[in-house]
Length: 391
Image 1 (cartoon, rainbow, N blue to C red):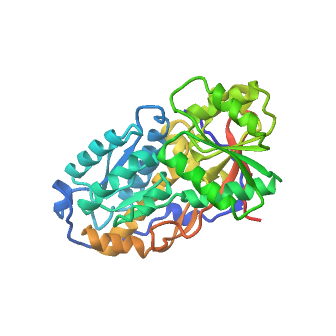
Image 2 (image 1 turned 30 degrees about the vertical axis):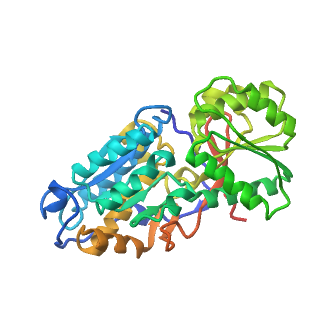
């Protein structure tokens, strides 16, 4: 895997607090699962569902690596409540059926909190499973509005929501002077939800939605969709699906003579997009949450990651790192892992420094600020920061 970002520092962020977890030592009871979750001894287990197989398999290791870094740092500092943390991972393959089975495996393994969730369509059916087991979820990547609308107890998102990403996309479109916007999704919950959010918010702007098109994921020929896009004559296309189909559509749009702007959503912001799109990737822009690669002060964390894994941190490695830290902070504040106390403690976290900034959750368990930025494909095929949308 390659580092999909460049080292461009823009916003000044003090990340000393990121690396320095002030986790004291005291005792506390536990409850909520088997084994470690029902004992006061042994490691406290955190579960992670992520795609380690299937079309989105590139993201699973990024997330696992980030989470494991946080766990190792916390354990080296004495653990939480005098106990080590332990990460238990399961492959959800970005598939709802696989995710349901994998979530039940994590419950059986005795996890006290979940720090996973990449594909929204795979994460959504796991919400009631974890809620019924009293396991709070700190979701590092999945961000469909449906995750919020499900209104399950103990669900927290540390990635911006679909509404917040839609707001960033429209802000960028207006900044670019786009007036005719085409929305193309891949029919997944995440993608369709994001496209719908853009369409709804566009009604409050001077941007006209000239096309709402859905493609069938897994195909290789999208010429019919490309013809629909060209017929709509947009000056910007916003692709809200994942990189596999996004790369093919970008290449086929360019081959068909599309000369307008192509903006992609965070599910496509990966170096593999450029590998698939080829020359058509140049100039493609994306909506994405801030990463340490884009922030001053994150060089040490990146260097540690590279030294440990032999490559740079990929998408959602930092969010997974922060998800573990949020849970650790919650356990510390709750004095244990009893479900309701832990959920309340996570809800009340105020000011914990994450890569995205000081943490404060809304009543719905979403970030009080979205933090989406605009990235673009650079000369080497990596996505680099283009505009932080801060002014």
